[in-house]
Image (cartoon, rainbow, N blue to C red):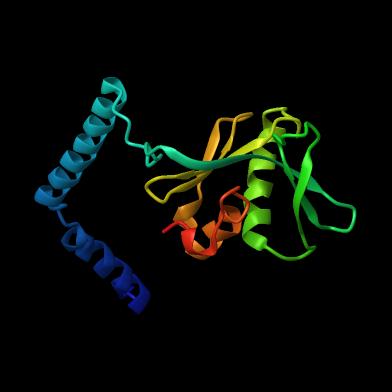
Length: 173
């Protein structure tokens, strides 16, 4: 019986397979392995040496405020002074429902971490402006710090206005 076209194609495909196997280039593989090894080594050295590579500001605090944030029944957010002179929390501002998405989103993330840690809203947040222009919101309940200037001057200014000496021209860079 003569070979059919499909038999010839199959036979040809098997015969040509040996030509399709190519050796992997060694130089790029060695380079990638060295890059991975160097990265692991650098991370190990930083961890073991205790070097602080965080972007947290070390500049002195020039203005700060302790804040409580409370959800209101109308969907707004009440911003309360957490350490008022008179003793009772003082209302600083009410964020209207549906406005100020950056403030709401930042607080939502911090409150979520509190819930995961089993911590309630009792402990206030700490807002601080540093001499180098950085603005941070710190949650002592979870030790989470948000560098607000990282989100741009417009978003940082939302929090800067909550500081006791807030001035429009003093918005962080």
